[in-house]
Length: 174
Length: 454
Image (tube, rainbow over all chains, first blue to last red; front, side, top):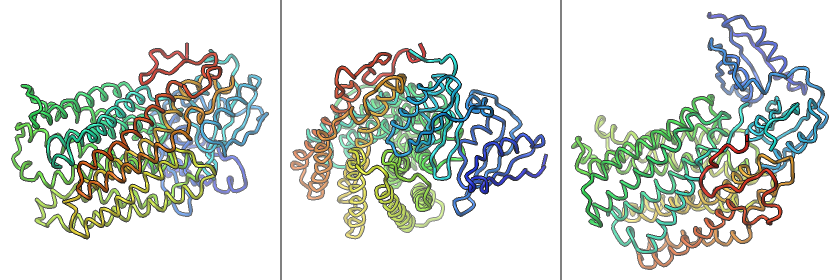
């Protein structure tokens, strides 16, 4: 059980403008039972905490200088497949975003309004991508109420990139 | 990536808090309590606890139930305890104020009201702290603003326990005689940790998130902010340790208090640097009224720091401590509270009313829910009023203080009227007010049914 954690440095991927989510999930999938993951990132990957918590990992993050973070995800032995998975369940295999929005410089709640306006204009199954000033917690709530699916990640500058897939047979419409 | 929902009882906490604020300001105009009565008179204690528990603590609890889930990106835990906490806090505060009125001889009742307050109030705070603390725990590792809140929660536990000990001593039911002997020290801790820890430190933490959020300033955690947290936490810890230090180490309280004050000054100095950074580096060029009024509150905070230093250096702190507390409670904390409510109430009302239809049909803008031009002068009257009231207290002019206290009272009433208008959507043109699928929010109660899902 004292197996050393697998190490993954996503800083080079991000530096080259890449998307580290796939690499992280691949590394997690390749872990031996009971093995942890040591992640190095140029920011604190807060959204990942929930995603990996749902897979039974507890994060322990510390700043290691130069704005970089080291997060050790330790398996807790208790997998909790809950509603949190909704945001990532359909991750792979989504079509390319048909709309790209940059809502970073808008005052709240405008980023959310513009994003939802664009989501409502999508054909079910289509996706859109939006850059938002921060992790959009109220938007997640509304997307969940309406039954849309999403995935997203914090960007290096603290903004948040979300990809939303319009659902088929929408919930919550009044 | 869980979402944050609207906290059901936050508006009720805010409404009760504002009622206590207006009542307390009204009592000051009526000449009740300090400065007409001495600082330690029961009448003054009524006034002080209406402001600190009735107004500021209810405001803080209501705000934290809403914002802690946002700070740590996880839903509020045990939300069913929020209402019982509210009822216990209101009952406990009622008992406390009644108990002080008994001490003042204003009425006679055969009930140990202070002892009852000593049970109800800590129970109410315990429930509130439990809900917030468990939510924070679920959101580890904590972002910096949440760490300020965590320290604030420790502080309110200390303050409530010490307050309860006073209540038992004053009601004659305390089993511990040493409490009476140590009362001056304990009172210092109760006041300093109450204002500096629970109310002040938590407000600083929340401001680290709210200011960048509404001014679109960079939100990366600055190293100065870490130092604010460390220095402030250390200062609070030292203050809390005054009594054990006195009892066990036989050292005087002087050196401990001096070090704590220096750390607090350092923390506030660095906080000033961070505030300046947020305002200078905002991407939103026009400052909205909530952020410009907050500037007034920050100015009052630093005036209070200067006043505190001046009173310390001239050895007149004891004589003028009332004026200093007035400036902190009304200038900084109340000023900041009102300025942030001015944004939070319209924002939450907007989400509650228009959230279900946003993106599906045109909705009014949040800024259309209030009329800044009409309200800006009231914020100016408020801060000017607090300033001249503090001056009247320093000049020992109780009658002048009563007259000048009308200014903050009138301004508060005007701001509260605007907040009620925001809840009622009364500033939005009738034809755009309630698009199909929306419902008029209730003034301060949650919607009875979860109609959004129906």
